[in-house]
Amino acid sequence: MSDPKRLHRDEEFSSTYAVLPVEKKENSEEKQGNETPKSASKSGIKLKNHQLQGLEVDYLYHIGVDTHTHNLKEMFGDVKFVCMGGSADRAKHFAITCAEELNIKIPVGLSIAPIGKTERYSLFKVGPIISVNHGMGAPSISILLHELAKLLHYAGAKDVIFLRTGTSGGLGLEPGTVVVSEESVSGELEPFHKLAILGKVVKRPSKFDGELAKEILSCKGNLPVVIGKTMSCDDFYEGQARLDGASCDYQEEDKMNFLKHAHSCGVRNIEMEGLQFAAFTQHLGIKAAMLCTVLLNRLEGDQVKSTSDQLKEYTEHALKLAIEFIKFKLAQYKTLS
Figure 1 (cartoon, rainbow, N blue to C red):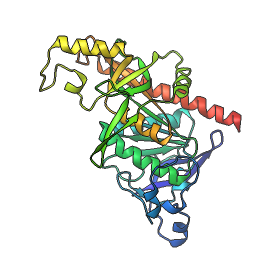
Figure 2: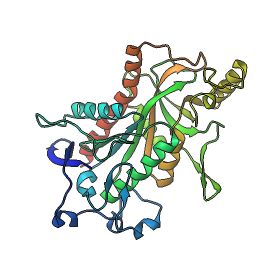
Figure 3: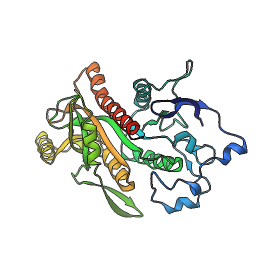
């Protein structure tokens, strides 16, 4: 495993860490300062699992850190933003861009590197920002959300905002438009996430923080941004009414009727993680928002026909909006302090 070494305290934003790999702590004095489930912070992210109090050590297996080996409070106690997207490359790119845009200096000869394990997720930290990839689909992001929530709880991080940035198919929108989600609905257009727990289906509402969405919208500048509902599906092809999968038991007329109906219900884009993301963060009371760029208008077809340069530009729109919002909030925090 690897964890960050103290490198630089950014004067403007009180950013304590840039992410660089170092060795594990070995001596007993250092381990005495580490957070454990029994001494977790009473403020910040509130977990809803009293069973954790019985753990001597909580191993956040998929991230690759734990409450015994790592001093989570020192490593992550200053986190204010968790930004996540699908791929590891995008997570690293966002971390590098944040360092540049927020003037978080990395010492010469060193570079931003992932913390912990990288088999499933790659987690980077620059200043008060975690940038991490969540993989594809609800099961993958669910695992990450559980472990991130526990990590930040043990670290005692306060007033943390979760942001998911990504790409999506649009409904009635031009490619390049960013949709800030007000609510995520299922492939059945239901405003809740269904999860089978102990053989019974539990329904959890999937709304995003409305005021947070408005704050993000106010940071759009010249970017094309709208607020709307997002349909989150369990499948890329049939679940999203595509006609170009290996299996399709419906006709184009059926597809268009459904997509037009979804649009009339306020849905403006389609992706695969938002329902889980919204339901989880709402359930734990974590402020969260989702910012997804539209790559195509699904009312006009299923194939992405933009050039590679256009797609690169479109993908950057959601990342730029997230960074502008982070700048806005950091300036706000500085004024309040």
